Length: 133
View 1: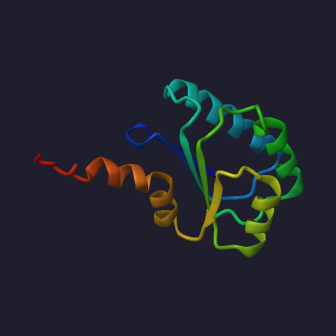
View 2 (view 1 turned 30 degrees about the vertical axis):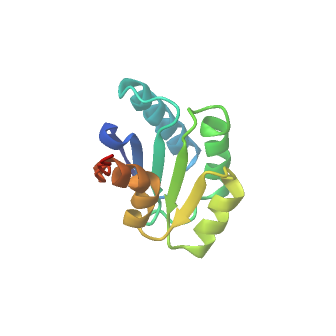
């Protein structure tokens, strides 16, 4: 139903959903992601990409359960959140539930990745100019 990948090299929590959740699924998912977050040694300020292209719109029961288990203050805060979905209805649901000013919605996973870590990656690989006095 979901995949969770922690990419320490770019401080990215990369999640992909593959189906519809019910309240019990959300509870199990929340326990899993919280336990793995700690086990992987992640801390607040990470980046989050959630690929929802294969999951469609979540039922209201699941949305309420996400609020209960992973709502504000219940999970360490990301510095940037990228949601990936092409569904207009899913975009509306995400915008209603996730109001963080550091969240953006994308239709392509690679565009989301570039926005999440692109500027840092470019800065790290761009040679510094050599100034001769």
